[in-house]
Amino acid sequence: MDQEKYIEIIKSQADVISSQSELISTLSELVQSLTDQATNDVVVSGFSKAED
Image (cartoon, rainbow, N blue to C red; front, side, top):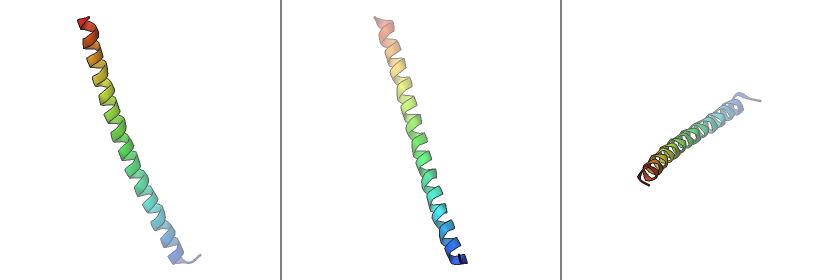
């Protein structure tokens, strides 16, 4: 395989890694958002039960 092929493969792999990094970041934000929402739900639920 010639050098240009290697360069193309490496560029392609770099693009994949970049895309995976963006995906992980997006998933991390989603998890944080869901965690915050779950925490809020538990707190609200706790207050509701305390008032009963």
